Length: 200
Image 1 (spheres, rainbow, N blue to C red):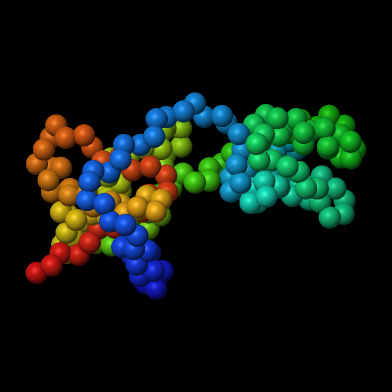
Image 2 (image 1 turned 180 degrees about the horizontal axis):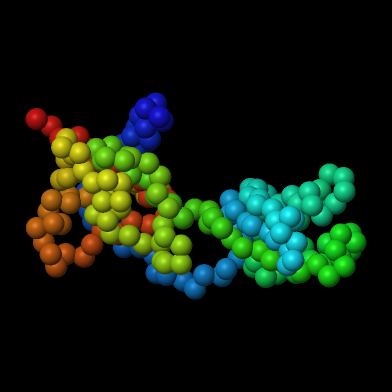
């Protein structure tokens, strides 16, 4: 854990430091609902509880369903399809393989890829956190830190780093707290927050 944390801190402090404000999140776009690599799917068949399977979409966009074939399983392209379209494809394959007479597959995305952020450094519970399902993946930075247990006594709130892409932004949360009307700094998926240690 400690070596991993050290590596993450080093990564966060590398790259161009930007003292300007954290850019606002990109405009929300209508979710396509398409399955993506890294998503975790739960696949079930109506009336066949023993055939339920959980699988992760690999980085080629494929899933493997051993239940659909007697030998070697069946690979299916899942990425880019909606859960309903994938369910139809699985149902058709199950009927083709004569696995079920009346195959009615259901697909549920139980874990979304890329919907997480990390909080490191001087917080009580550093780690990776996932945005709440069903809500836009946006969070004020103060709330993200609170979910990580809040600051330790060594935290330097005037210099919190946010790594976004190839840039590292310096956020002065002490200053933001003293300016109630100031636009909040918003965290989005992929951000890495590092709370630096105070200098005595």
